[in-house]
Image (cartoon, rainbow, N blue to C red; front, side, top):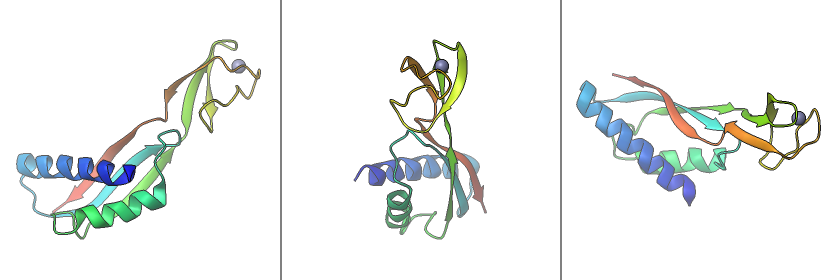
Amino acid sequence: MHEMSLCEGILQIIEDEAKKQHFSKVKWVILEVGTLSGVEIPALEFAFDVVMKGSIAETARLEIIELEAQAWCMQCAKTITVKQRYDACPDCGSYQLQVSSGDEMRIKELEVD
Ligand SMILES: [Zn+2]
């Protein structure tokens, strides 16, 4: 499952930060997930619990913020919001769109003790 390896990556970052900042417990993990990232939120939540078990983030709560994707429409020469990859521009119907954000996932914030 794709979400498992994402959570392993998150745990890696948390452990690196724990060494740098000397915290021993994570209370909240706030993630930003773009709507085009392909991440399934329920699968991510499930994987988070499994992967964090036995780690310093075992009791951490997960908050997920979904980010709308933005793309550049070459026809309109402006930034528009897209709901799915390969969507047409809602204004002009063009498919010449360059996705500029919304296909990533990142840690926005860690709340630690
Ligand atoms: Zn357009």
